[in-house]
Length: 501
Image 1: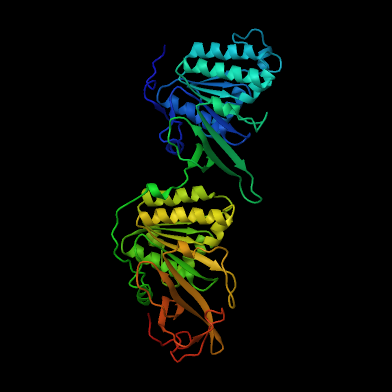
Image 2 (image 1 turned 120 degrees about the vertical axis):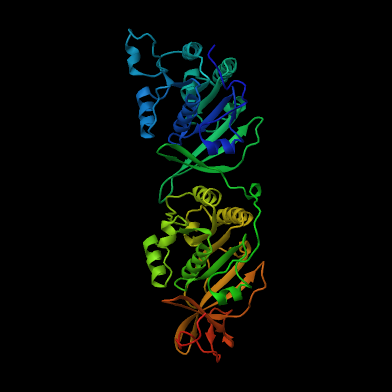
């Protein structure tokens, strides 16, 4: 018998750290697991990573294939910059099987009986004595069996055989023979289902779900994953309840004195602020000002751009006296331009979590939720996703700024989704009419942590950044959606000499 360093360790790593996390530490050793999914969903890549992880720690791995040739598997490995030198490849389908001079005969499933195929597998395992085995795939086995009863008996016999050889086995199934047949689920010790869905626009989305795992407390539900150069990257579904961190509750200033006054002293750590208003009213500039103040006090920040280009945003901020380049060069500020057509929600949540836990980010801006919505399959899932992410960020003591654009400029404005109940603080931006011109105003509609102002103040953007004026009295039509101002307080935009914020 070969040396089995992992025979008594209890759990076996899949070679994918985040998949191990979902499985609560890996799979139980010396058991058979079903890895099922349609062609192209990623079964082969995950199986190779499983064997390569074994090779890395000195375990012998065996890949038994009825559906792919060694050349095809080698090509898959090459695309990920892997070498399969330490993995045994045993082909049961190959045109070279016609060569009678080969020491190991090659079997063609269309011409041989199932029993002969099983015997070939057993002979190979007895000879190599591997610790990890991949069997690809069961669909060809079912075709050989010709009926469900014989197929089930042979799979049970194969499972029993592997259990006596101290092998951890991945059985691959492409579900092409009968997608509704679940008999394999009862036989396998665990079942992982892979799914691939094509979008009407953008790249395909992949996700996996642990259907069954005996004796293991795993993380249920769907988890997004992607196939990248270097293997499969899994993004475990974020569960906020498992992440708590101690933090101080000292208020953080925004960098605009009158905005701090309106917020009741500033922004509280562990809360999120929703900047809500029509396009062009100044939401992004306000978020940048708050972020720059966080950087100046020594916090790390991350800005996720869904709408505007990174270069455009930096140039606009620079024109208002807010140069972010120094903080980007120092690594204190991360600006990520996100393409919602190419990034799954699970991967985005994983990026946010990595920024917080690995990079020490304490201030986050998501600009904007409108584009993020387009990455989701529906409004209900956006709310669930955002609820979990905001709960996580709040428990980590992070200050989060969310930007939500509204449809329309004047008149009734509306949002694609209502996130007001998820927000700790809501700042409303509005256009209003006065003296034949259009101006901007803002007010704080809600704050769960601080006593806030209920006044409406003029809001102005200029070369020196953000300016906020005195409370404006005698507004009319604010709730009707057509606000206009008939008060006596001077307007900053009409009188540039007015007091600065």
